[in-house]
View 1: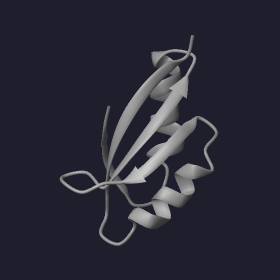
View 2: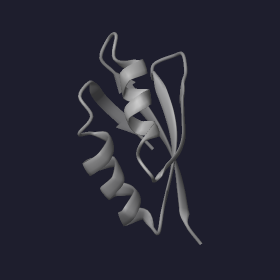
View 3: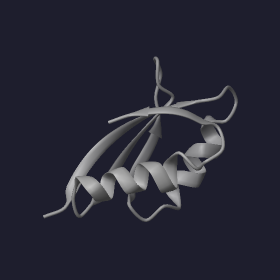
Length: 72
């Protein structure tokens, strides 16, 4: 069974849509939506285990220009 994580993403001003479109191309991102409040986006990730989730966040989310902070 896969591990699912809900990832809250804070973006720099004006970059939410670009980040959203970038994350839609990541295979492990099952959905991503813009939200209001202290975070700008919420993404649902799936991986084999928690280590896999951590690798996705570190290597495929935080590497997107404009991502400031995340919380799972």
